Image 1 (cartoon, rainbow, N blue to C red):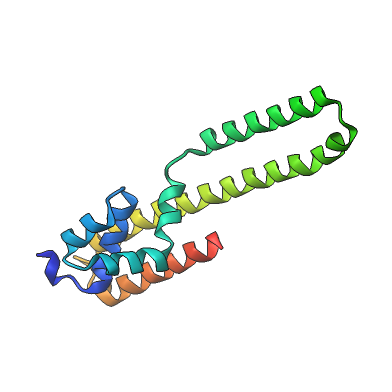
Image 2 (cartoon, rainbow, N blue to C red):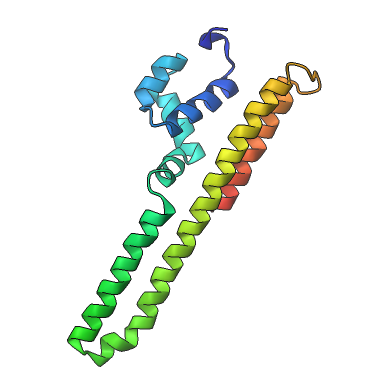
Length: 154
């Protein structure tokens, strides 16, 4: 089946997958026979940039960088011996802990996206045999999954 025969929902799902794989919007637009503006609109509405950025660094790398920052901050406060800075240290450490919590949330979102992508692939294969899985139902499931991920992010 040629890509030009796909409906917009199918093109949007494919565009999203290609975007997460690191493809550029112009390349995706050319592959799917839509305008770059269309891809840009889909990406903006779907928060694709945040989702792709979430995949670029692992939790371990981010937490490691935060721990180095925490250590540097503590060393600096201790070297200066400034009582005011020492009093502000718990607030700064709480900020770092908050960032680590956000990283954990990002990991949960990535796990959801990966699980939903696998589930969608399974559903598409299952739809060959199970006629109850119509394109409309598959589209609805994909839409609800995306809304769930968006609400989890926000």
